[in-house]
Image (cartoon, rainbow, N blue to C red; front, side, top):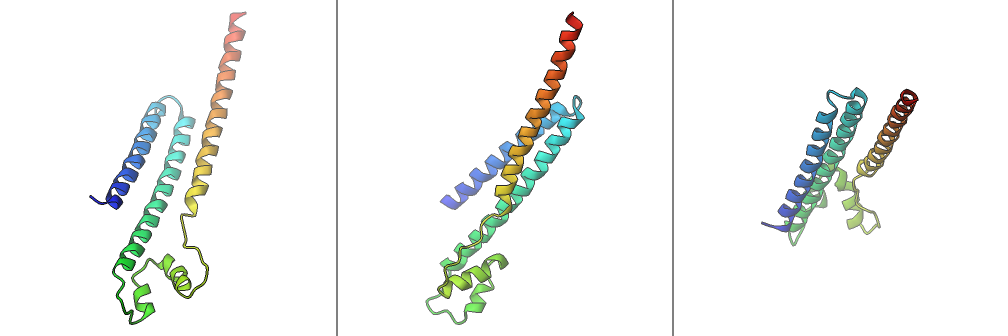
Length: 144
């Protein structure tokens, strides 16, 4: 097994573990709190979007690695070789070959989705605190 396969398996295992936790949390809220269940479903949707983007990025990177490994000593045409690359990589790779300092594209949506997940978690914490304070106030009123 190559390092690439172990990386893919590790990433898939981490994604599956996160998805299992989301399903477990959602199942806990299924009958008790529709608002918490809706937040969990929203977090799950964002999680899946980020996972899909990272999978597409990995496929494009693997395609570039394969094209570079199969690069012949004499390249008949650059355009023909570039056609085997992912469409998002063709122009940046062409510019890099031409000598320009252009960065290859990376995941763009995943960092924003991570921030969104953090904000959704903070919103959930805030809603939990409000519910706790409301319950505490009700308990104190009934104790007097």
